[in-house]
Amino acid sequence: MTMLDDRTTAPTWPAAYPQGYAVVDVETTGLARDDRIVSAAVYRLDAQGNVEDHWYTLVNPERDPGPVWIHGLTSDVLEGAPLFPEIAAEFSARLEGRVLVAHNAMFDWQMIAREYARARGAAPVKQRLCTIALSKELALPLPNHKLESLAAHFGVVQRRAHNALDDARVLAEAFRPSLHAAAERNVRLPLLECRPLTEWTPDAARPAIGRQATGPTGYAASYPGGYRAGGWRPSRKRPPCPYPNPGRYETGAPLKQGMRVAFSGDTSVDRELLEDRTVEAGLHVATSVSRLTSLLVTNDPEAATSKTLKAKSFGTPVVDEAAYVQLLRDVAPADG
Image (cartoon, rainbow, N blue to C red; front, side, top):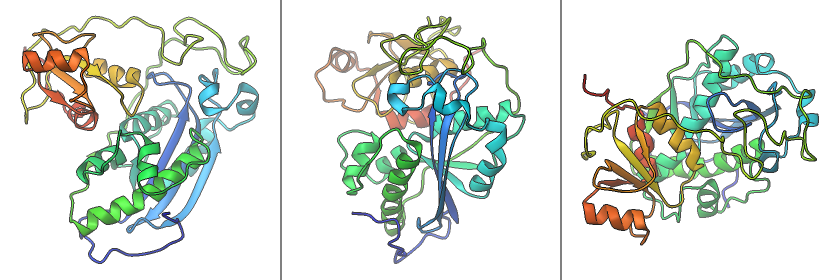
């Protein structure tokens, strides 16, 4: 088992590697752009991935807590927790001068950036590293890209899944051997730029904690634009894509606004999140694969699903989830 206090140094260490990391996990009220953080944890690591310290806090989201059955944090628990502006300075001190590391780092970074924007500030983070992308760079033999699979690969035991502190611990334990493997092979780390939000325009207000009728879990069963009782995906209809379809994706080229993207099979993060990011980038979410589909995203291209079979018959390009997340970073504008 990988132990946090087993302080070692890789035989060789690329000079270009960062000098420190902040392994982060946040639990949230949901996945949409107006959702809030309910708890956050940070493990600070040195250049070789050794743990320096850790920190955890609850956060009052000023609204219903969302999927209590996932993170276990009820309205009663969160009512006395600090607001995000009250913990922002301490959070910043934990992130300052470090690369933010997270499992599906795009999601954690965007949630953090939005909280800072609401508080009229900015997180002191310049780069992020996604452990999903790193596992792909290392070609780790994982069955999927879930945190539990990465943890199992390195013999790390999860104690409380979806608890921010334990998830951050698990990721820190799995990240250190990943970092050492990358250093030993001189693998380029998949670092991406973090661009803080400079302003924030909230969506329609949602009921605050203590101001709505809740069920036995402390979660509001329904509200306008809210979550369905049977799941935690926003019950909303997506607007049509405003851009024309420019055709198929070409390997090595960027995605272009208007492209039709379909998804198939298991993903490491909730499908709704990937679809949210797709729509926000100006792409069209296709519910099926046709000759007009620009790209199919799947982590199991050999699965005999209707979408993968149609993609093969039509010659539709296929990429995995990690590659798609990277492509979403730089989507080309639609032709004028």
